Each structure stands twice: as structure tokens, then as C-alpha cells.
Length: 155
Length: 393
Image (cartoon, rainbow over all chains, first blue to last red; front, top):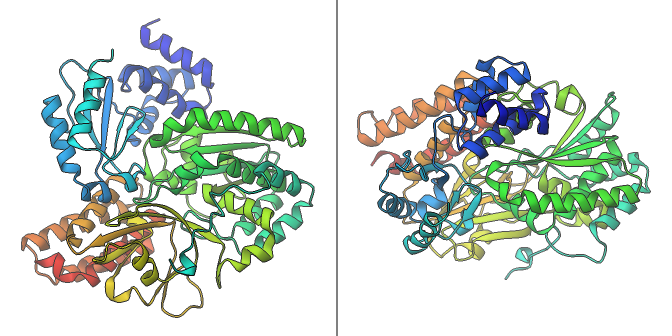
């Protein structure tokens, strides 16, 4: 078995091989590999007795299940209206400067990806962003620098 | 502060009776009495659509099925809304008690909290609460088990049938209605899908009784409501207010003195300009004078420094991305509306072109399959009608 097959097998054992387990399994793959690879989708399809096109259709439907490789830490900056009004652009500029990438890109060392996302539900404390599952609010260029330095020091 | 704007703390407050005591009390009553109380209370869904909660429970209770489900809809994605996250953070026991009462009434043995992926950090906290809830169910001999189901960043999954599709492992695309989830829901079984706040309010009806509940709010819109206030306001946050307040009162309390417009109900809601603050009441549409607006509780305040063109463009960007793409009116409509207002702004199209775009939203309203496509017209027409100059110049 390939590494991917083993990973998928473990997730199928955990969540079951019914169709209802598909989203949790895809999320599990994403948590481990930071994207859902073609190989993983094919393996999931085999395990759940679905067509691989079906699994692909499901993965690409969700904005949090990227099918292109992402960095270990995926930064998603909220771009919806209230965060936008609260100087989201300044936050994005700062991130682009520190990480030396544009929105949509991943750093060469595969550590960070910078993406936009829709309303995160922190409008009263905007601008807001997610780094993987962690929420950061009331962002300023200064706080961004601290947050990114902290992540840079993590493995 | 005016009387009407006092914080009620019905939803988020702590009361002498704990949520699980309220559930215990409810479980001693006949399910049909709980349902008739809920119907009498006039409680309507707090997600924004405003269907009578008691009726939903009644249909699910009456539906034939060897298995039934209760789903708590915590896929809170409407721009400007964050109340459900606060509820799940501060008073998760009230939500679970509401689910427990619903399970008892309908005969469901299994419940899910469909939590949006953006709130994944809440999972450990919710799982601790669910473990404690299960102990209480066991004590009360209620055979009911709840688990968290995590979404993955799709606004449309807040629509109940899209949510069910997502749980079943399909693309989160809305289904045709009927059949309704109360008869044909998760895995084809009778299912109640209720918003987080609705479940809390159902629990409130059990705690304070129909009479007290009906004293809150106005005709056709009973109870209190959590409002998520954001934008140009010195006091952003969550407020537990009574239904029936006028927008004028609201703006006096929360505005920054220079409020130009308030977006009621998020990107899929309505934009109310200053001249209509006095004649607009917040509640579900009923026999009131003036405009009465339903709301999932999102209140975004814009002051005169804001360009309403940018606001509308931001919404359309949102809808274009979040449209599931299943039906043509919404998939193409959202794109064309965005392209259209950009062309008018650039001067590539005459201002009259806005009329054509308004006609397009009318078409979307009647032909789109679900609430997403149907409600794009709300913000589009209310912004274009009221701030036409800003769209052109």
C-alpha cells in the first residue's frame, strides 16, 4: 500500500465507508496533507465505492478543501464587507510583504499559503483571519508581524 | 438608553433554572402540549426565513419514520452575523437542551450540530458540553445522542436541504422542496433542521411559558432576538433586543452620528437609507404600518464615508463565489449583475442599463432554486434604487 492508501484506510476505519463519511474523510486528508491530492481522491473513491469524479466534485465544491498543494499554515483573510471597511487591504499588504507572496500563492518552503475567504463571523472584531483553524481578530500590521513570526518559529 | 433597547439577556443570560432543569421539566409534559405551546408562542425560525418552529416540530412528530433526526444549523455564514457562534460559546447548554426537547417531542434518537468549518476551533468545547449533555439525557432516560458535523466553507450549506446533502456526502446543493425535511430529510428520514438561536428560543418558551414569551416583541414577531451589530458603530457586538424596534431607534443607539444606511439581514437582506429609518420596523412581515423587515440578526451600519457601490460590489462578489452553480438564474445572474454594475460605473453602459439589471434580479427572485439566488434581489434593488447616483458616478 502507498502512503496515501494507508492514510485513507485509517480515515475510513475511523469514520466508516458510507457515503455520509465522505466529508469527514476529505477533511481528515486535508488536515494531514494540507490539500486533497488526486491520489487521495482516487483512493477514497475506491474505499467508499464511489466514482472518483464524484469525490472530485465533492472536494472542489468546498472552499476549505483545496485540491492544489497548500502550505502548512493556510492564512485566510476575510474579505467580506465589514472587514473590508476596516482596512483589510492594509492587512493583506502587510502579509504579502512579510511572506513575499501574493494572495493565492504559497511560499517556496511550503510553510504559508495566503488566501482570501468570505465572512468569518467576526465582523464586530474585524479585520479577521484564520491561520488553519485558529482565529485572529482586530488585526493591525503590528499584530500581523507578531503572529507570523510566531508561526515561522513553529515546525 | 430607551426602554425598548434595554438588553434582555433572554438568550445569553444566566437564569435560576439551568437549561437541563428546563429540559427535565419539559420532558414531564406530553409532547403535544409542548408543540401547541410552541405554536401558540408564535416562535419563528431565527435563521432568517422565519418559519413557525412549532409547526416544523409538529410535522416531524407526525411524520412516519423508523428513524428521525434533529439537526442544529450552525452554518452561520451570512455576512455580518456572528450570534450563533456567541451562543455556542456562551450558552451551549441551552442549545443542547433545545435539541433534547425537540428529540423528545419528535421521537428523534440522533442529533447533529452542523458547524461551519470557520468555527472548527469550537469543536473541543462543544464535545465537552455534549458529553455532559449525554449524562443528563441518561439521567432523564432520554435516548438521544448528539455529535458535531463539520462543514468546509460553503455559505449555501446554511440552506437546510443543501446542509442535508452536505451531511450525506453529496455536493452541498439545495434540493427541490417539497418534500420538506420534516418528512424527507437526512437519509430520507424525518428531520428537524433548526437554527442555533431557534433551539435556544424553543427552550426559552419552555422556561418562561407562552404568556411571558408573547409579552416580548410585537404582533407576529414574538420573543427577543439577538442582533449582530457591526460596521460604522462605536458599539459593535451582540445585543439581545426585542422585535419591533424601529430602525430610527436602533441607529440612535448604535450609529456613529453619521449613519447613511443600515443593511438589515446581511448581504441577502435589505439596505435601508436614512430617509426610511423612521418608517422601518424590524420584525417579520406582518400587519404593521411601514416596512417590516425579517432578519437573521445581521445589522451592518454604514456612515457617509462609505461608497454604496463598493458595498454592493462586495456583496455580489460574495454571491458569485458562494452560488452553488446548480441553477442557471443564480449562477449566471450573480456574475452578470457584478459585470453589469462595473460596466455602468466605468461608463461602458448607460445608466438605463441598471433597469435591465433590476429586471434580471426580478427573474432571479422567481426562478432561482433556493433562498441564495432569490434574495440577491433584496440587496441589489434596495441599494440601486436608493443610491442610484453612487452606482453611476
